[in-house]
Length: 360
Ligand code: NAD
Ligand code: MN
View (tube, rainbow, N blue to C red):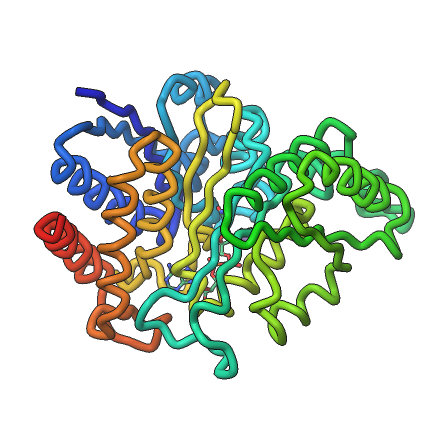
């Protein structure tokens, strides 16, 4: 029997709460499937580790997880440590060296969830956002000089490479092709940003020729926010830069009902390094420790992980169990307007999994 080695990195805040729920659910899926098992190694990296050791993860941290089959990540973000330290010290310290360049973020309105847009009926909003995850605005190029003096200056240089844009564009076109509508929107800001974003437009047109069966269009990012709200049904697959897609995907999550539901996969498509799966939300300082974090975003991320590991049947069973649970408002956490607790939602999903089995 195949055993998958999973590295669990809960991080901080509600990251620890949703990842322990996620590991329970993952073990339940494996037990119910019977065809594979999972061995989960826990890594206590994050803000508390930083307070003890002066860094977010050990120096050889990546070596400790390099040979795992996948990484399940919670959140980097601690109330007592600056956000750029926690983010660069942990999440980006894994994503970038492991070349997880394709960040995939599906958005759908799950059964039972009332989205904020009353004019939209559920099935109309069914998107996948592909975020370039290795360069662009978050390349880390830049610096600060003359700190504290009136001459102080700071730059964050956006960096695009032909190789980087081509590979994300090809990934997005291929993903769009695999979906029923075969429809891709390339988001840029090539009117104001006249170098890198123009390169994106040119490469989109080049790559499009390799995918004649995919219909594609271009949108400026500001106009895209409007289209997402006003005509969500006109969108299917989206590709955008690191920063633009970061923002668009929080909007997408809110339009689908809650940030607490939204999943993501940080993929190294070539499989040279493990890929990383995580809810898109952060540490949520306002609700941490209360036991009310919505774990659905983590569970859905585990669905993506199972698909990536080559267990599509188990992935489909878990998704079905999630949808049965969201359909019942008794199991809605406060972010969805309910009063359920993390542990109740977790038990309900594990219960629904056995139901899914009984139905075959
Ligand atoms: P956040 O996602 O932590 O919270 C935004 C709002 O959404 C809060 O009101 C929160 O209560 C709510 N929310 C988020 N997830 C929820 C869930 N599962 N269930 C119920 N409600 C949920 O974003 P923020 O407040 O901007 O950031 C807090 C910290 O998290 C910061 O340190 C930030 O840097 C970090 N962060 C980390 C990641 C990551 O590691 N991937 C992502 C985003 C933010
Ligand atoms: Mn974000």
